[in-house]
Length: 259
Image 1 (cartoon, rainbow, N blue to C red):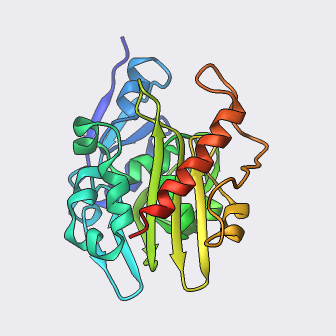
Image 2 (cartoon, rainbow, N blue to C red):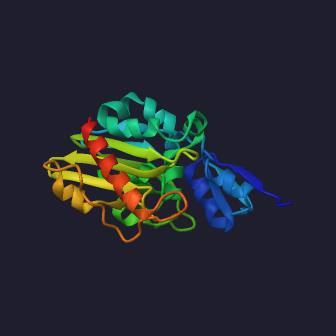
């Protein structure tokens, strides 16, 4: 039986120092991905560094041109936040549709972003909105942060502290849920800025990605736009062609619900 040391941090610098000192440590916030991974013996950390109660990671603040959400803010808190609803209602809509009530009550935006599950919802919002991931060491644009399936630009002793979103004119998210897991088999986030549309897709490939063809076609065309991507998933849940078609349908649905 593995022995795990539980470390409840009282500050961000303390958590970062512990992470630096313990090579096999993992950050614990909501634990919605970490705990199942441990149960299935996919990972076996020697220390868990709990950052869920750090007040600095639970703030939601809107400025003139951007919205900043602390890494430990739960999905439900994002969905219910009057600040988020006013600044980027499409992001609140996305958060309200993540998982089930139990997952939304515990899961955090920072944990979801750090895990970078290829079917997670938040990465699509980050890419489409052109968000910045703020860490204890630097700031990373979403285009540079997501590197592929379960892979990000984070290094060993780096902790996400917040996500900063530019405020769009309008945005919306639509996804087709897997009937068992609830994860997106294809999810599309659309953000409209003065410069045009930005579109990101999750669930359909081995990682989140921008859909340039859709960005170029909107708003004149929003149906029958072909999704071309070399990493489209072709597995027991759905063939690649089906996921591509789902993405087209979700694009149309998201466009209809731009808010």
